[in-house]
Length: 78
Image 1: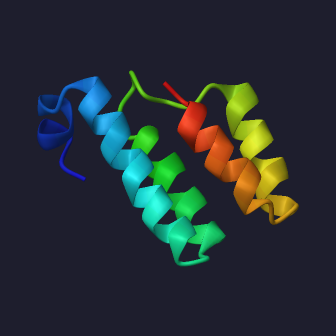
Image 2: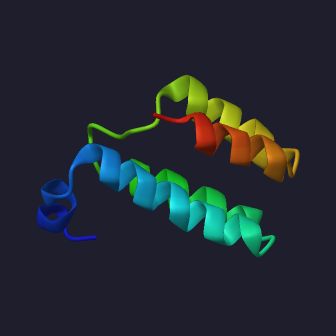
């Protein structure tokens, strides 16, 4: 992603876009790409990076194939 474009979008709008992309994957039953999309896009901006404890929880949820858990994690992220 182009850093200039990323930084031009207000943080709250950017987070919502990241969430929506991940939800689109989840709606198709694609947990792996939902996780990859959310983590990669969030970490593309320093003010949106996932805290280490959430990243660790996310890994555990992915390993458990817990799409509902990931959906909750994404919904609650601010």
